[in-house]
Amino acid sequence: MKFSFGTLLKEALSGHRGWPRQWREPEPKPAYDVVIVGAGGHGLATAYYLAKEHGIRNVAVLEKGWLGGGNTGRNTTIIRSNYLCEESEALYEHAMKLWEGLAIELNYNVMYSPRGVMMLAHNEHDVRIFKRHVHANRLAGIDNEWLDPAEAKGFCPILNIDSRLRHPVLGAALQRRGGVARHDAVAWGYARGADALGVDIIQGCEVTGIRRAPSGEVTGVETSRGFIGAGKIGVVAAGHTSVIMAMAGVRMPLESFPLQALVSEPVKPVMPCVVMSNTIHAYMSQSDKGELVIGAGTDAYVSYSQTGGLHVTRHTIEAIAELFPVTRRLRMLRSWGGIVDVTPDRSPIIGRTPVPGLYVNCGWGTGGFKATPGSGHVFAATLARDEPHPIAAPFTLDRFVTGRLIDEAAAAAVSH
Image (cartoon, rainbow, N blue to C red; front, side, top):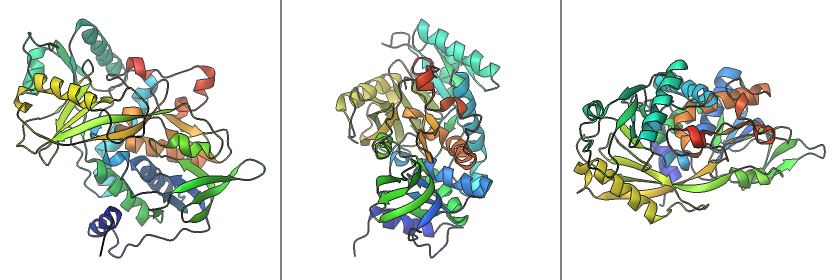
């Protein structure tokens, strides 16, 4: 007998404490109060908070593959809130505070580890920018501090601070509360919590169309398993939002790029924190299994490829080997490309669309994983109340009409 990965995943989940032993995927109902398109971390978090905080439990989460099998399973697990724009600070700090209690909230170990996120400065411009970040974050009540090169090496002993480097380390900004969590465990935890509250999670159910009434509002979705009625539809499908929104006649200000990453063979613990470099766009941490998790940049062209360009990975490996000489003899275990939606200002879109009953949560670029709890929390409130959550209010589609952009492309600690 052959088993798909989705089947094996369900069998694995059924053995976890608290997940129903005989859990079976539900058949779709004729109609739901809310249909969420996309069973990644953001979509499952939205469904969980809809049920838990707003009492809306007649909810279906539709996924064309298996839950957590998209970008949630293809990220580099980093969590931080040290953004520069005030709107971004509020959103990511909200998510950070939820991360800190998420394992207790879900009664599920998401392996959250606040081991610290350190961002390297390699030139005078970097120094000034990161010091500005430190001061801006402190004014907003967010932890961040400046380290000189010796202090940076003291925090991460394998870091090379030789002044003769091509990109010498002149200092670093450190957010001690930042860290990592296990990517797929977050999706599983939210899925189990939502399932226990009565939410239907339907895998292998691809959305092929959005049906609208003559008056314009949505009435449901066409899927590979038939029509499913819905009072409201929330689209949370990273990398493919534009395709789904086009089904309702909505054009989105998005481009989709492959984002590169790789892991090394497992080794004993050598990397005590997360280290990021904007100048060379490379960052590294170590997983609980011992793999060095290395993130790179996006490809220079739009694509739905999940392999991406080799030149991006090669550039990153060269930089990592220079910053961390102990990695030079390690072998690469695997590499991949996750598809990210990118907006012109590199900030997300959260809220209503011009189509009544249709809502969207997208455009996170490389910031999606770290925002997962906060994103689901504010999007659920927006869906439930039909008005933006105060933290999500600056991130509506209207900003592209008014020109009030949240330009993290120029402000963020990494280029995204």
